[in-house]
Amino acid sequence: MPDPKVDVLHGTLDVLILKTLSWGPAHGYAIAAHIKQRSGAAVLIEEGALYPALHRLLRKKWVETEWGVSENNRRARYYRLTAAGRQRLRVEVAAWTRYAAAVGKVLKPAR
Amino acid sequence: MPDPKVDVLHGTLDVLILKTLSWGPAHGYAIAAHIKQRSGAAVLIEEGALYPALHRLLRKKWVETEWGVSENNRRARYYRLTAAGRQRLRVEVAAWTRYAAAVGKVLKPAR
DNA sequence: ATGTTCCCATAAATACGCTATGGGAGAGCC
DNA sequence: GGCTCTCCCATAGCGTATTTATGGGAACAT
Figure 1: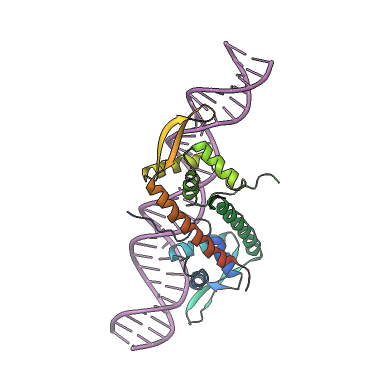
Figure 2 (figure 1 turned 120 degrees about the vertical axis):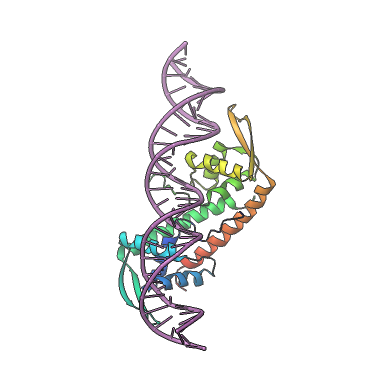
C-alpha cells in the first residue's frame, strides 16, 4: 500500500479556517474553496474534516453562526469570527510561524 | 517566561528523524537531542513519541538498527537510514516544503 | 426528468503524538 | 558501599483530529 495521502496536517486546519474568516463571514463550502484557491490547490479540505472543525470552533466560541442564503441562492450557514476568534487567530499564526521555522532549521541542508 | 513548548504536528516527526539520521547513524536519545538543539529548542521530542516512531520507521524499512555502545559507554541502539529511507526523506521534505509554502500563502496578511 | 453543482452533516476507522510509568546501567560524590 | 544523576530504551492508555464513507436536500441547466 503505497503512500497515504496527507492533505492537511493535524492542527493546521483551525488556523486556516480562522484566517479565511478574518476576511469576512463565509459559509463552509466557500471556506474550503477559498483555502484551496489561495493555497494553489495544495491544501484540499475534505467536508468530513471541515464541518467537525467548524463545530469545534463554535464550541470554543471562536466563531459564531447564522443561517442565510448564499450567492447561489441556496440555504447556507454563515460563520463569522468572534473577538476571541480573532485573538486566537493571532496565537495560532504565531505558533505556526514558529514551528514552521523550527522545522525548516532542522530540514535545511548542511552548511 | 519559561519554555514555550510546542507540540509536534502530526506527521512531521518522521521527517525530522529521517533528516537527523541523514547525518549518520544515531541512537534515540541523540536523535531527540539533535532535533532539540537544531530547532533552537522549539521542537522537543518526547520519548513516548520517539520510540514508537522509530519502530514504525523500522517496520517500513526506512531505517535499520543494531545494538552498540554510546559515546558515554552505555548500551544503545543505533539507527541508520536505509536506501529506501533516504528516498523517503526526499519525498517527505518535498511534501513538507510544499505544504508549508501553501499554508504560508493562506496565512499571509492582506495583499 | 435528469444530472450537476452547491451546501450541510455524521459515523466509523485510522493515525499519531502526549502523559505516565517502568526499568537498567554507567559515573561521580560522600 | 550507598546515593543520586544522567543516559538510554520501551510500552500502555488516552485524546484528538483527519480521512473515508455515507447520506440528504435544494437550485439550476439541459
